Image (tube, rainbow, N blue to C red):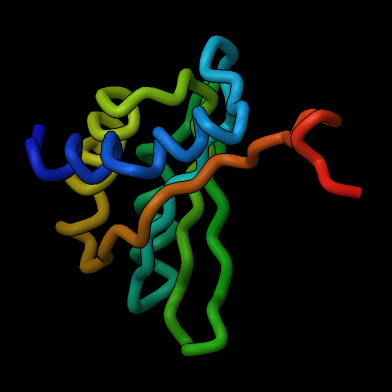
Length: 115
């Protein structure tokens, strides 16, 4: 596991999520993204991301390359995100793709919404 990746995950992003009231005690679908030059390689990568808590989707981008979105239900932690990113990278890079980040949807509580 890359120390840099853990630092990137743990830097200001998770702190801002906490300040925004993110529920770290619950599991959430976290989206991980990769870009591939062609559809065949993106589809081949999906075979590595199947299971009860995983879902993979391939879509074409306007630029002509292909987007792989892998959704994994898990707790949001620097180690968990970093470890899965590394696992994903080990599949994506040999197939000619590159990682393109991660994200999670945060529900705003009524108290934190500004109407």
